[in-house]
Amino acid sequence: MAYPYQIKSLEEYQENYKQSVMDPEGFWANVADHFYWRRKWDKVLEWNFKDPDVKWFTGGKLNITENCLDRHLGTLGNRPAIIWEPNDPEERHRVITYRDLYNKVCQFANVLKNNGVKKGDRICIYMGMIPELAIAVLACARIGAIHSVVFGGFSAQSIADRIQDAQASLVITCDGAFRGNKDIPLKSVIDDALMGCPSVKKVIVCTRTRTPVSMIKGRDLWWEDEIKQVETMGNPPCSAEEMDAEDMLFILYTSGSTGKPKGVVHTCGGYMVYANYTFVNTFQYQPGEVYFCTADVGWITGHSYIIYGPLSAGATTLMFEGVPTYPDAGRLWSIVDKYRVNILYTAPTAIRSLMGYGLGPVNHKDLSSLKKLGSVGEPINEEAWHWFKDHIGKGRCPIVDTWWQTETGGIMITPIAGVTKEKPGYATLPLPGIQPILVDENGKEVTGNNVNGNLCIKFPWPGMLRTTYGDHERCRTTYFATYENLYFTGDGCLRDEDGYYRITGRVDDVLNVSGHRIGTAEVENAINMHAGVVESAVVGYPHDIKGQGIYAYVITERQTHDPELTKKDILQTVSRIIGPIAKPDKIQFVSGLPKTRSGKIMRRILRKIAEGELDNLGDTSTLLDPVVVDEIKKGRL
Ligand code: WTA
Image (cartoon, rainbow, N blue to C red; front, side):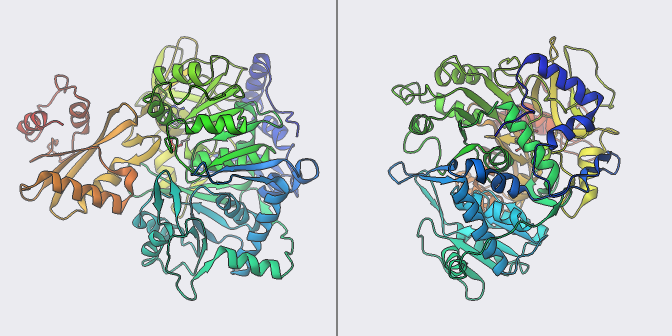
C-alpha cells in the first residue's frame, strides 16, 4: 500500500499545515480520497461548536472493515495482519494474515447475526488481549453494531454502569484472561455485572484460561460452538453493512471531572480517515514494518493504534497479551528481539517502571530492528525520555511524544518520526489539520510564544467525538461550553520560544494514574460507599512510576480501632465499585476537610499538602475551620 498523504519532509509538513488551515475541506478530501467508499461524500464538513454539531463526509457510505480487510486481500492477503504474543513466552505465538483475519471476522460477524444482532445494536466487549478481541471488534463494525469495549481491569459495577448506559443487548467475553502471573476471571465478573442488566440477552464466551465458568441456559453461549454452527452452514461470506459516514462506530467510556464516566461516541467515516492518517504520518509507517503498540484495546490507544489505524493501513500490528514485567522486566525487549519489531509505541509509566530494573534486562537483547519509538498517555519526564532514546533506541530512533485523548480519536500534537524536530518533554507541533490555541481562564487567546494557557482546539478534525452517548448536553457542557466556539481539552499547556507545545497536565479534577484516566469524583463516590465513611476528598500527587498517585483524605463516623484494616476495607470497596486501577495509594484519616464558607472543598490546599508543599498553602483565612489544615498537615503520609 502506498500512502500519498504521508508527509516526508519538513517543507512538506509546513506546506501541508498551511494548506490544512487555508482550505481544511480540500485538505481532508485529499486524504479521504485514498479510502474505499461505497459512495463518495456530498459535503466534506458541516459544523458548529455551539450545539455542538459536527459532521464529516456527509452522504458518504462505507464500512471501515472493507478498508481494514477487503481492500488489502488482493495485494496483502498473505501478509501478517496481527502477530499475537501470548502472556506465557513458552506458549506458541500466532500469526494471522489479512486473509485469515478477513475470514475470521466474517465468521464471527455471522455468529453475531445468527444471534440476532443488527445494525445499531450496542455490544459490550470485555476480553483479554487475544486476537479474538480484535476479531470481535471488527465483526461488530462489519455488521454495523456499535462496540463498547470495557477494559479488563474494571469491576462488575463499572461494567454494569456502562452496559446500562448503552443498553447493550449482547456481551462478548472470555472465561478468563492471563496477565502476568494473574488469571482474571472475566466471565465471573460479567455474571456479577449482569445481575442488574436486563438489556443483555446473550453472552458469548471465548475460551482462553479454562477457568471453570457457570454457563446460564438460554443466555450464555460458547464462542467455539457458535463458530462451528457457522462452519456447518458452509462458512457463508458476510457482506459488510453499508454505513453512513456519520453512523456510530463505537462508544468508549472515559472519566471526566464529574459524575460517572461518559460514553464518547466516534463515527465511521471521520474516525477511519483520522486514525489512518495519524498512524501513517506520525510513525512514518513503511510497508512491511512490524509495529508494536503495548496499550490495551480497552483504551482508545488500542482502538486507534492496535486495530483501526494499522489495519486500515495494511500494517502488521503486534498484539501482546501480557505485561512488561512478566516473566521478567525484559519482556518487551524480548518481544522486539523475537519479531524484529521496527516501531514501538508505549507509555511513560511502562518506561519508568522498566528503568527501575536497570540495564540488565535490556543487555543481550537485539534491538537493532527498532527504527521509531513512541510515547503516549501522560507527560513523559526528561529522564525517561533520555533512557528510552539512549538505551532502547540506541540513540538512532526518533521518539514521537504523542498528545491526544479518547475524545480526539487520534494523535493531535506530536513530532512526525524523523521528519519534524523532537524535544524531550514536548509533544512539539500539531499535525496538519489540527489548530490548537491557548486561552487564559477568561477564554482570552494567549498569543505569541513563551506562554502558558489552557489548551483548546479551534477547528474541527475528522476524528473528534460527536457526542456523549445518550446525553448530548453533557458533551456540550463538558467540552464546548467552557470557552465559546472552542473545544476544551482539560489540559494545561505551554508554548515555548520556538512555538513547541508541552502538555503540563490536567487542569480539571481528572487524574492520570499510569496513563489511566480517573476522575477524583468517581474515586470519592466509591470511597463514600464504604460503611462508616462520612466524606472524602481525593487529589493527585506526583508518583515516580505512575506519574500521579491517588491521595485520599477520609472522614469516618467513629475513630477506627484498626486504621490499617479500615484502609484495606476501603481499598476493597474502591476495587469493587471501580476496579483495582482506582485504588488510592495513600489514605489519611482526618476529622474535617478544608472548606470555604459556602461548603466547597478547597482541593488546592489538599493537593499542596499531598505534594508536600506545606509552607506554600496560600490564603487559608477564608476557610470555615482553618484549624483543620494544621491537623491534616501533621497527619500527612
Ligand atoms: C494525557 C490517551 C502529556 C492528557 C491517548 C490527556 C498526555 C489525557 C499525552 C487523555 C502526552 C495523553 N503528553 N499528556 N503525550 N497523551 N496525555 O483519554 O492529560 O486516556 O488529556 O487518551 O492523557 O487520556 P486518554
